Image (cartoon, rainbow, N blue to C red; front, side):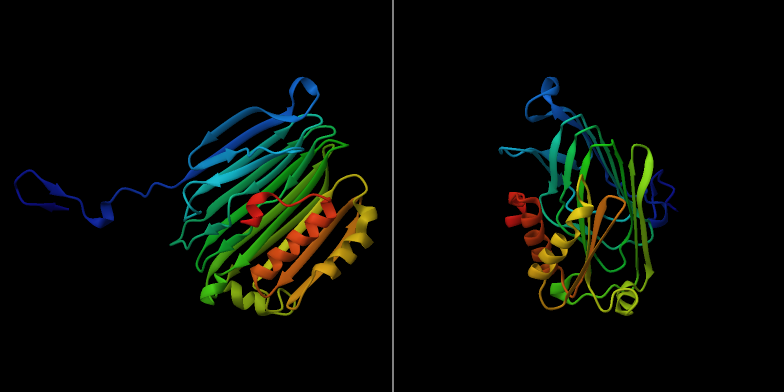
Amino acid sequence: MVDDNSGSREPQPAEAPARQRSDGRVWLRAGPAGGAGPTRVLDLAEAGPSRLRFPRQEGALEAVLVNTAGGVACGDAFTITLDLAPGADLVLTTTAAEKIYRSDGPVSRIENRIALAEGARLAWLPQETILFDRARVRRRFEADLAGSAALLAVEIMAFGRAARGERIASGLFADVWRVRRAGRLVYADSLVLDGPISDLLDRPAIGGGARACATLLDLSHGAEARLEEARARLEEAAGPGIEAAASAWNGHLAIRVLAEGVGPLRSLVARFLAGYRARPMPRVWQS
């Protein structure tokens, strides 16, 4: 603190106010109006830089998530809450790849909370997330499904900016998935990469040199019986530098993919899903 005896006191950098961080929140309730007909927005709340847009289309209601902040920085928090009424049919995607920028210490948090009532369907299809060097983020995906609800979810993660040949010398990526059906835990998965992430991914038992990965989970009626179909589609869509595997148990199907770069991985996921869902990918995926 500087005092020149003139009554003015100049703040020093150590006393500068704490940085303001983004707190983005979206809450959506959707379902057929009056319990029948096409899916409509029944209620919507938005806060901070998070917004939902609904392009016109036939069939399922499509929601496009927009982050007006342009990315996720150190200490930011983002929460998406979806509540789908009986018979709802929703596709959720994002306008572009989400970027997790470097942090000087604080951890960013992304929370996705989903509730699907009887007969509700959700296709969770965000575009890829890019983790920058020294980024620190904890992400959590929680879904509560009624007995006849259907969830298809995919997440694509790129470790470093490929165009720059970036390696993540230091960072944190913690990813937690928890899915319950009729109150019973049916799928649990946790991944923590902490420290020199690129070096960790070079290990054969972790990533085998991969720089991008994807998880696809299908919890819909008949998903387990589609295992051989899924494996055939993966084999058809895969290219050089990509490893993909599918497994099925307890009524659901899980797919893991590792790739040398996010571009080929993104293409594989798009081709696979277009065939597997028998529906085109959201238009924003094609831009």
